[in-house]
Image (tube, rainbow, N blue to C red; front, side, top):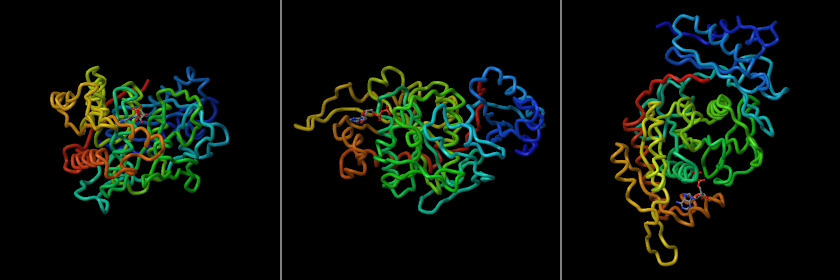
Length: 403
Ligand code: ADP
C-alpha cells in the first residue's frame, strides 16, 4: 500500500477554497493537525460555528479532495469552532478550538513535527512491551480509560485512586480528565491555578500528589456553562492528549465522561487505548449500564481490563459491621459471565468521600487503609494485564464516520 504523507494531504487541501473564496483552506489556517492511520486520514476544519450549516459544503469538498489521493481508504473531517480571534498563529496547520466557551483560551497549538513514538521501553517500568505504532503519543507508553455506563458511580474517584496506586507501584503516571462535562480532577487532587505554556506552543501539565494532570477544569471556570458539540469534544481531547508536554510516562489514566453516547465512543476511538476499566455499582450492574460500557469498548476493539465494583458494601464506621446495602457479590459473577476480569470491590465509606472532597485521595492520605490496599491490588492487576500482553496487542483503528 502507498504510504500517504501529510504533505500530500496538505497539497490536496490547498486546492480547496476557503469561505472567503479567494485563498485556500490551508493558507487560511483552517486545517488542524492531520492524522493518518491505516489509510484513514483524519483532521478538523476550524470554522465559525454560526456558519456551521454553510460550512458543510466546505467539509465535503475537503473530504473529496483528500479521498482522491491514492492509498486513502477513508477520510474523516470534523468541523470545529473557530478559536477566538487573536489566539490563532498565522501559519498552518492549525489546531481545532478547545471548546465552545473558554474563559482564558488555552495556548494550545500543534507541536511542530512531533514524531510518533515508535518503541518504547522506558526505564523503571518492569516488563514493558514496545508501545504500539500509529496514533501513539510520544513519551507515553500506555494509555488506559476509566469509564462508566452512567454518572455518579464513583468513576473519577476510582480513576484518581487507581492512578495514585499505579504511582505507588513505582510508575510514572499521568491523569487526563476527559470528563469535560464535569471535570473534577482539580478538586479531587486539590490543584489550583492554571497550566503554564511550555514555550507558547504546548501546555505544561499540572502536578498533584506526584501525578501529572490535565483537565478542562484548569482552563475554564467551574461555573462556566460549556456547550460542546461532537467534533469539539474530540478536539478538546486531542489537544489535552497531544498538545500537553506530558514528558515520559509509563501510563496515562484517562477519566472518561460518563455514559456510552457518541462523544464517549468517539473518544474511545480517538485515543490509542491499551485497555479500559469499567466502574459500576451493584445496582448499576443490574441496570445494565455497565454492560453498555463494555459493549462500547468492544465495538471499538479496546480490550476491557476489567470491572471495579464501587460502593460494593458498607462498613459501619462505629461498629465495623459490614452491610450489603445494594446486594453484594453480583459484580464478580456478572464479570465472569461477561467474560471480563473482576478487578475488585471498593466499599462505600465516608472517608473516601471526605478525603476526595478535601483533595486528599485515600490512597495517598491513608496508604495503610483497606481501600489503599484494594487500589494497590487493582493497580497491579491492571498493570500486569497491560504489560503481559493480555491487553495491549495492536488495535486496528475501527471505522467511524463523524457527522
Ligand atoms: P463519577 O465520576 O462517576 O460521577 P465521582 O467519582 O465524582 O463519580 O463520585 C460521586 C460521589 O460519590 C463523590 O462525592 C465521591 O466522593 C463519592 N464516592 C465515590 N466512591 C465512593 C466510595 N467508595 N465511598 C464513599 N463515597 C464515594
